Image (cartoon, rainbow, N blue to C red):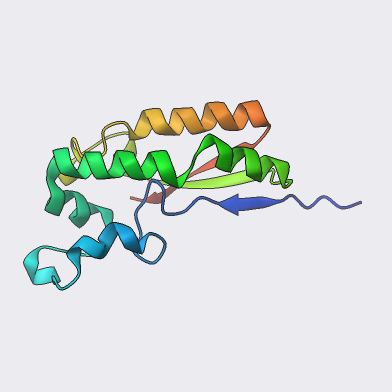
Length: 128
């Protein structure tokens, strides 16, 4: 009897990583760490500030994963999706304050749609 399950990872959605979402960091090309620019979500929010950072992140959340994305995964037989999140997703601090507004609600949306489609979700506290 085969008990294997089919799963996938939704990296780069709630935790920005330049190797997964390089386009989110193109605006910083030519800048260095000494300019206050790093290669992570912390310095992304720090550099853009709460208003612009949140605007960019909300557009990313709305387009990186859509209802159609989740439907297509379910249709292909995917049973589990792993969703990395940061500790700042629920309890904002530092440059995340304001920058990640709406993340919790977007995760709740993903959980609701996934439940409707029969997808199981593993919220992975990936960055702390």
